[in-house]
Image (cartoon, rainbow, N blue to C red; front, side, top):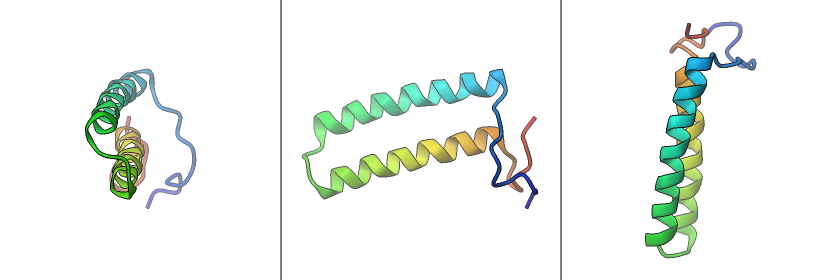
Length: 71
């Protein structure tokens, strides 16, 4: 793994645009989940996993598979 794998990596302007595009899509999906999935532990799990997927998308946007910065 790259030595910077666990360090903060400031995204480039283009990466921020990609992150914001995906964030907007995740908010739309969140709204759909809240409107259509009954409250309960499964809905809570789905929302938590959506947050996890969002975080991993940000990692994928900013880093290569070995953890090195994507330029």
